[in-house]
Image (cartoon, rainbow, N blue to C red):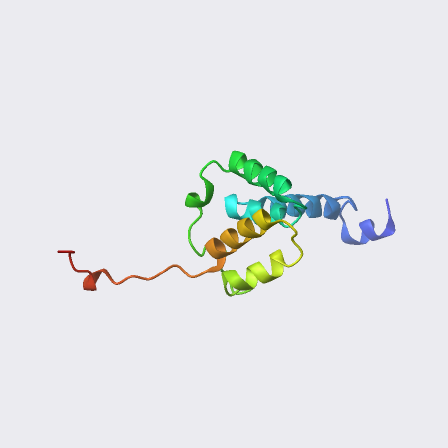
Length: 126
């Protein structure tokens, strides 16, 4: 048994196993829905045909599509402040127009604030 394992009283493989489990969970959290799937993959599309394959793959993996993603669900204190900030960061090296559109749509859905409406001021249309 290595000297450091005797000092700590644990197997030296345990930290490696814990790191592996945490990295797997982190990767699952990254692509938690259709929008994050597109963001993870669309920026690597070199042309519109590749972007179409990304779109189809994400749609197959997340059949609810963009409608199943809550507006603003990617917002956290450490995330992008707006969809535009996300688009600038994620889409700056994308060569495909379709990939850029997919990234823009995903960034808006994840990082733009939900629109707040005041139903008390709603009036029926005549």
